[in-house]
Amino acid sequence: MVTRKEVARKAGVSVSVVSRAMNNSGYVEAEKKKRILEVADKLGYYPHPVAEALQKRRTKQLLFFCKDLRNSFYIDMYQGMVEAAGKRDYMMVFNGSMDFENIRNTMIDGIIMPNEVITRHYLDTVGKNYRLPVVSASYGSPVRFSRSVPRVEIDMEKVMELAVKELRANGHRRLALAMPYPFRCTDVRRLAFCSLMEEVYGDRMKDYYIGIHREDLAGDSRILAFLEEEERENGMRLLEEDFFGKGELAAQLFVERKIDATAVVAFNDEFALGMCKRFHALGIRVPRDISLIGIDGSSARKYQDPCLTSVGLFPEKQGAKCVNVLLDMLEGKKVKYISGSPVKLVKGESVKKLD
Image (cartoon, rainbow, N blue to C red; front, side, top):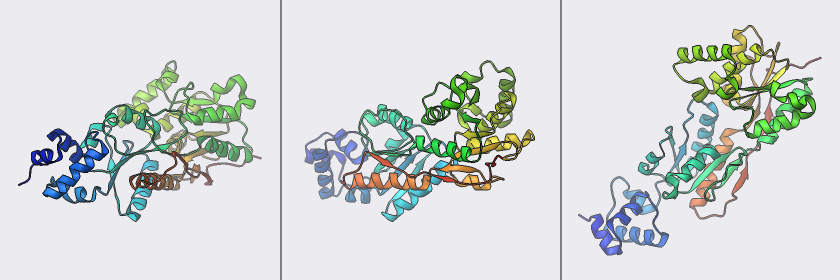
């Protein structure tokens, strides 16, 4: 029976280099790796269960690395990935853990990351030595990567422009923005909203910002008490894990602070649906009493009554494009390092037309 030691001796390298080449678990020079694989082929050495993968130099699997399994946006994105991968004879693998070390033990040819922040964290840790091809879904964040990684980007400035334009077209002038971040955050959604509404609010902008973050809630004892009660009932920390729960808290804040806006732009659809639920519990009807618009255009919006108006990011298309860019890289094709993904207003019944 052929062993790795024999492959190493024949290829003129150490056993550890052979192991890295076979397992795709660390950096090996391209020419050296090619020689090792050729020697393994010739000697008939195929480590179970990757014999076929070794022969073809491909596992025919791609990994979507995403923790947020509650968010329907990412489920829709994954569905787009599955369909696109299937058309090119590939399979998608879903990893719902933030343990990057697990990637080393997964038989994959490349990785798709859900956003720029997670991509950077991966590149700065395990990705330093584990140099599989990576593509990142992107939302306009100024995050810099330690090495070049293609991004499939959604123009969040345009997204916010579409949301504000729709509300203004329906007669709304006083708009609020509900986000899971503090007011000082650099999220593109917040920056775009502030730019669009600066003429209206001036230095009062913060009065129309609902930040679901402990930094912004520090002086609000009633809301913190409500938060603690909700966290006890749900058995989780809402400010860390659950956009829907954050949306509920945002609606409570809107009422407690007596914000005089007639419409709210929510961080995403899950956030907006949470706001709808809480508004309803407080006797406030959407859109009769308050208009609401989300961001994502996810499938979950269809099951809200009334159906949520949203700016569609078409996560299925973004996911499909991530797959195609990654497979083009694997096939040695030239790819753009920033590719766009479409956005469009998706109308529902959650925005009221004012007289």
